[in-house]
Length: 104
Image 1: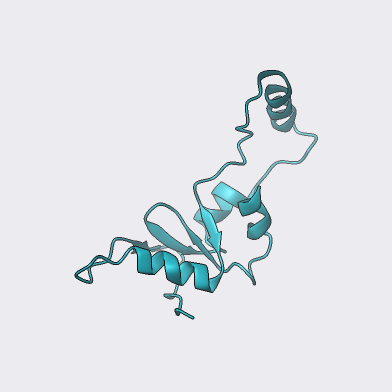
Image 2: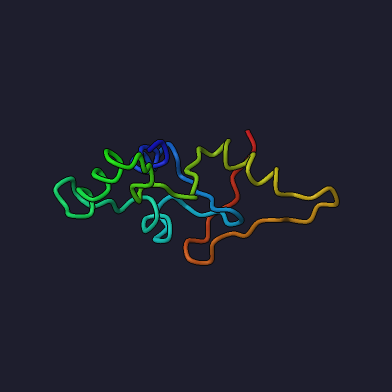
């Protein structure tokens, strides 16, 4: 839910990252996995709530492996993925082509 809340504040959290790829928050790949949630009256939502209430299942479909980040968090994410000899272990999304965040 935290990432979903962050998705709604793109001015504050302009970056998003998957396991190996850095995106802009407005990237369509991010919107598909974080931003588009069906309304509360949908059959899908009723099923998710029923599973949670009766089975204790926490996976409502809102879970994501994407992380919404402030510029400083994104800069740290990039720095963590630079090897000891300077090699990079991340990619920049080819869809949204984000600029590298500045360390601050």
